[in-house]
Structure formats: structure tokens, C-alpha cells
Amino acid sequence: MKKKSLSVKRKNLKNSIFNHQNKNKRIKKIYERFESLIKQKEFQGYLVAVSGGADSLALAYLSKCYQIKNKRKNFHYIHVDHKLRDSSSKEAQHLKKMLRKFKIECKIITWKKKKNTKKTQSDSRDFRLKVFESFCKTKKINTILLGHHFDDFQENFFIRLLRGSGLKGLVSFYNYKNLHRNNINIVRPLLEFSKEDLFYVTKNTFNFYIDDPSNKNLEYLRSRVRFLINNLKKNGLDEKKFKMTFNNLISSNNSIEFFVKKNISENSSIGFTNNNIRRAFLSPNFFINTEEIALRSFTKILQNISGRYFPARGKRVSNILDQIRHKSIAKTTIGGCVIEKIENSVVIYKEITK
Image 1 (cartoon, rainbow, N blue to C red):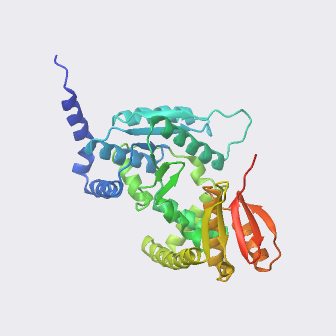
Image 2 (cartoon, helix red, strand yellow):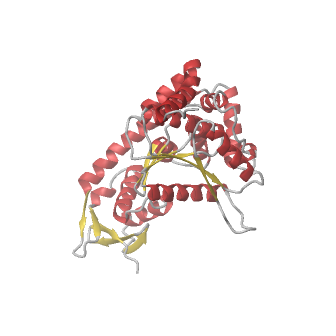
Image 3 (cartoon, rainbow, N blue to C red):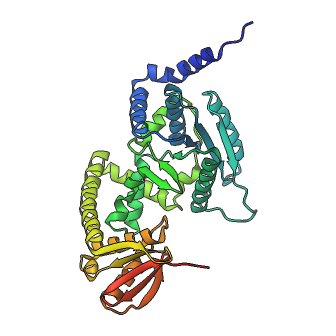
């Protein structure tokens, strides 16, 4: 019996993968939108994060379709087993088996943490991201695809609202669609899709997903917020209304950002000391602005000088701003920067630690 050629095998795989789209117009429409979003910017290889939930499995399916259709080789599918549940290892192996039916080879990475050490959701997220970044550097790829969708985006908004976030904090998750961290792109191509869309894709392709019980555990804030949103939907909150409100907030935020850029451009100068240390001079006019514009401008300067990924804490920055305005500051440090008042100007330079 003759062996099938590689081209025939590829053709058969392509036919089996796209069979769901040929038979299902809704899945085809979702894929076409996904493809248009991915194609907006080509990257050097992809890591596809697969938790095993319905949303991440939809991401795996859509990514595999894109990989085959566009003849891309450098795709890697990764599942992190956090060992948060006794059944997690068994679930991971079953997930790997199900993905293989679509010729998706999924690598499982296990979190080996000391026994009797509590693993929080936050710790899990941090570990997962470090694993992804390390894998990307090893394989020389520069993009991580995450399965966050519109419902996650909506939940994040209400979580930040409950925590008292300002305008920038409320709209910030929108900017997380494409992030750049440690020379790696973190892309969330599913933010335009609802959880219902992705569940539909998974149900009609894999007909399998891992149901994480913590998603329904009201001990977690996100679960309580999810419950709250479901009640709001019953009382008239729909996707269209939410997006309308959110777009208005983005418009307001963009207006503030315009004046922040203007303030930085007109009232600050950035250069280097004789020792090649990054330094900024801020004129008195830099601080004669509304609180929000001054706060954002000052935070951006601090982040620029320090080179840190995360900005300094808002409350501490606000306290230093008050001290500068009331001329009660001589020299202090914050967020990897040294702040010094010299005559009428404020000088900021990178803190050098031994």
C-alpha cells in the first residue's frame, strides 16, 4: 500500500479543518474577522496560549486555520498546568489528545511549586506570562496570542470601577489589545468577540472544553463581577449600550492625552548627563495644569526616565506633585528616579543602584 504524499496529507488536513467553516456560516464569519485582525500586522512566529477553556480552544482552532491557510510554520501551542486542582494533570492530557485530532501539537508545562505553598490566581498569571516569555525567547518568536474576549474586557471595566480607578484606568484594558513587553508582542485578537461567539466555535469544532470551577466561585472578585453583569444585562445593559458609553470615555481620555503630550512637548526637555544618565528638566509651567493632565504628564516623564514597564503608583506621584507645587520638596526618589528641585526647575534623572 502506497504512503500518502506530504502534499496530499496537508490537503486532507486543510479540508478537515475548514470543513466546519464550509458547513457553518457563523464560524466562517468569525474566522474571516479573526484573520483580518491578525493580518493587520505580521509577526515573527506565534505562541498560542491554550488554557483549555472554551475561549482558548476557539483561539487554538482559529489560529490553526490561519496557520494552514496562510502557510505559516512558526506556531506553538502551549498549555500551563498550574496544579490548582487535583484533576488538572488528567485534564491537560485529555486536552492534548483532543487538540491532536486537529493536528495541533500542544506542549504542556507544569508549575512545580513547593508543597503547602498557596497558589493564588495572581501568582498563576505571573508564572504563566513568565513561561510564555521564556518560551518565546528560546524559540526566537516575538508574539503571544491570548484568548481574552469582549466579556473579559467588560468584566475588567467593572473591576476597575469598583477599585476606584480614574478615567485612564477604566479605558486601559482597551489598549491591551496589542502590548509590547520585554521585546515580545502580547496580542488579544478576540476582544471583539463575545464569549458566546467563542463557545459556539468550540462546541461546533472540538465539542469539548475544560470547565474551571473557580469561574463560578463567588469568593473571587471577577466571579462576583460576572454575576453582577449578568444581572445588569437582565435590566437592559447590552453590548451596544456598553460600547457606546465606553467609546465616549475613550474620546474623553484621548482629549486629555492630547493636552498631556502638549504639556510634555512645551514644558519639558529630555537629554543625558555627562555620565550618560537619562535626565529631564521640567519648567514651572509644567505643573500649571489641571490635576489629571499634570499627574499623567509627570508619570509619563518618570516612566520615560526610569525605563520601567509599569508606571509609578498614582497616589505617591500625586503626593510628590503637591510637594513640588507647595515648594516643600528638595530631593526624593520614586519609581527608579531621583527628583530634585533646582531653583525654579525640577530635574529628574535615573536612580543608579549598586
